[in-house]
Structure formats: structure tokens, C-alpha cells
Length: 271
Length: 290
Image (cartoon, rainbow over all chains, first blue to last red; front, top):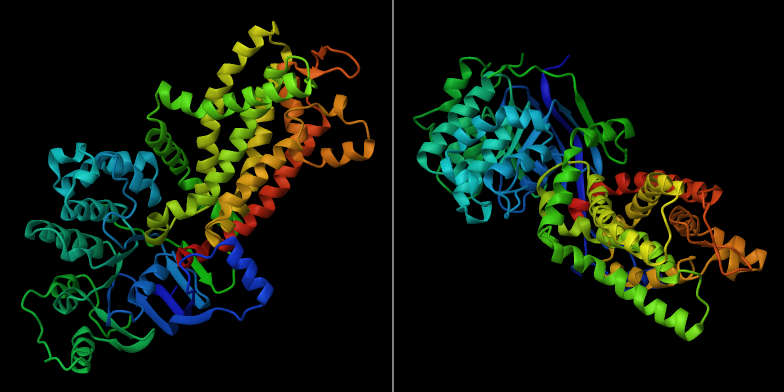
């Protein structure tokens, strides 16, 4: 058995550009009668192939509109490939936006159940994890108030808490680590470390390049829907910075990959 | 924390290939409580689960009953015996059907956030719609005994067929919901169009008249029998005991459901298989269309 957790091969995702927000029955009829040409195509991703070794932290960088978020949606199984294929080993838990899968009128506690079910946990599994999730979120007594009264940071903390307590084998995150106060970030870092040492694979999109250097084993630079560069974070980040006419970065002080590396093979070594 | 066991559970998603139905159903089953959570979320937020909310839902079937009583009994003078009971027995399940279908057409759009940010088998969303409407219908049925009392109709053993009839209708509702849910994503003004067709569908079904007493041409009868609502309404009428006897002003008390109901259920099963397959094929595109 190969050691990859994710394998993406010749992936292509196509969007049809519609000039109307949502078509109506009559506009569809008109289009049919006119036999008007097919709508314009736009490939958000094309010819993208890569593998992520299991237990690795994989960062995706690139300018806006380069296909990063689309990539995460594919790995989260929200979008299906229009070309190529995607292979995922194990359960995927994803956190793509703040408060995804929350119902504003329900309390934090009720939302843990709601969100947990959406992520594929059974009621008993949620019951077992409930206390840990509440403790991790640090919401305290606020857990019994409706989520609509929460601040953005509080929602993010609750969402993150549920997502990591699914004990996913693959965690897909979109920049959520940036939110939350210093203490919560510290807790996140610890939980991530716990997940890594248990062999979980993490894929994240980051605009914070320092965070990429701190956390990732490997880095993918996407540009206009295809791979520009894939490799060691320092090299890829600096090549990306150079393309933006920005000065290069050095390796940051608190290197989390160092901690991770105690249990994991370092970047570049192929098992 | 327990160490994560590297599972051999491999998900392979290839372009142009549909997920295996067995796997899809397994994933949906894992999240089955989502149906009750979504349904109760909707029930809570629409009607606050109180008497006023319930009365609100009953308003449409009751006013329609009144309209038809005035129209058919007093103006046309062509009413079946125990006409208000006859009509309400058909209008309640009809309301269940139409509110399921209307809900299904908008359910994907109204859950845009969930669909764009989380993966779960989308087929659960229309199920939640049918369950929500069924909950209203179940409470609505409580008004039927009041009508029965007015006409002095006691319950017969045929009432025991109700769960079977309800199950048949559930399958039929769901089977029709799936294609409409997909088209509702494609065309945002579909509910308005379909809403008009509902009225026509009701008039062509034996809700205001009975097939046996009002339609004599065998050809027309067969055409009307093609409509799955025909068998369904007859079954409800039979269970309550209001099926009229042709050529007299009386009603039969032994209205056991027959082949007509089996036809409705069969129609539902075929619709469910085709519609469900179509929905699962199309659901991977939902993320792009919203």
C-alpha cells in the first residue's frame, strides 16, 4: 500500500459562465429555441496532479482567483472533477468558512450536534466528544446561548473545535487558524500537533506565508488554475514572493515543523 | 487521544463517474439524524410548534374545503354524499404532496451555505422536506374525526390501512421531489409554474368527485387511473368510509385499498429510483450552480 493520503491526477474543474444570476424557466426555453451556443467555459483548475503523503501538512498558496478555494472544495468532495480523478484515503473533515453548518437560532451546544451530524458523526459519538469540544472552544457558559449572539471569533472557535474533534484522517482548512485570540491559537497548534502525531494529514490554504513556513512540510503554488511550483515551503514561498516583486523570507523562529518532525519524516524524504 | 487508524477506506472520485449507490446510501445512512434535525429546525422556525402555527397550516385546506362545498354542493349541486368530509380527506394529503414538492424545489437554494461549505449526501435534503410536510399532515388528520362525527360516520377497520396508504404516499412524494429539486436549482422561477399545474392536477384527480359515480366512459376512466393520485385518494376515501356507491346516495363502508393503491406505490417506486438516480448524478454540480 502506498503512503499517500491524497492523490490528485489531471484534475480539471470547469465552470460555465452565466451572465444571469440564475436562469428562469422562460430564459431556458428561449435558449433552447434559439439553440443558442453553449455558455462560456472557465477552467478554475486544469491539469493539476499531486500527491500528499499521509501525516503531512500541505500548504496551498497563490494569488486571489488562482483556484485555491476550488481545490479545497474538491478535496472536501463538494465539487466533483470534470476531468481527472481524486483519491482520498480515510475520512475527510473540512472547515472552509466560518460558521459553515451552523444554525444561528440554535445554541452553541445544539449546533455542536447539528454540525457533528453534518460532518458524519453519530449522536453517540457527538455525546462522547461534547465535553472536549466545549472545553476546547473555550466558550464556557456562552455555549448555551444562540450562535447568532456570537462574535466572528467565537463562531470560528466553535467551528474549528467540532472539525478537529471528528478525529479526521484528512483535515481540509481554509485559513481559519488566523482567527481567534492568542490563547486559542496556541490550543489549535497543540491540537494540530496531536492530530499530526496520530498520523492525520492536513491541507490548508494560507495567505499568511509565515504560517506556511512554520507549519507545512510541502507547499503548492497555484496560479491561474494550474501548478506553478510544488516543493519545500521555503523555496516555493520565496519564488512566489519574487514573482510578486516582494523580498524573500527566512525560516521563522518558532518552527512547528521541527516539533512535528520528531515523529514524521522530513520534507523531501520519500518513504 | 486515540491514534487514528489508517483506514483502508478509499474514496475515488473520477470525472464522469457516479458514486456507487451502495456507498452513497451508506454515507446517507450515517447521517440519517440530519433529516430529523433539518425537519425540526424547519418546524420550529416556521410555526413555533404552537396552536396558532398549526391553525395557520390548516387554513388552506379548510378554506379550500369551504370554497368547494359552496361551489359543488350549492352551485353545481353535484356533490358526493358527506361532501365536506369527502373533500377534506383528499385535500389534506394533497397539501402534503404540494408542500413537499414546493419545498423540494427550493430546498437546495435555501441551504446554499451548507452545500457550498460541507459535504454530505444532498439526497437527505428532499427527504427532510417530505418529512416536514408529513408532520403537518399527521397533525392535520386530527381534524378528520370531527368531520366524521358531524356525518355520523364511525371508524371502520379500514382505518388500519392508513399507515400503508401514508407509506405509499411518502414514496410517491419523495420520488417526485428528486427531479423537481434538481430543476429547482436550474430554474429559479419553477415553483410558480408548477404551483399553477397543481390546481389542474387536483381537478383531474378524484378529490371533488368520485371516479365511479361521475366518469362513465371507460376510456376516460383508464386515463384518470394513470394519475397516481387517483388510487391514493380512493384509498384515503375508502379508509375513512366515504367512497360513494354508484347509482345511490349512499357510501360504501368497505373501502379496502386495491390495485389502484398498488399502482400509486409502484409509480412512486419507479419515480424514486429514476429520480433518485438523476438527483445523485446531478448533485455534484450543485456547488457550481448556486
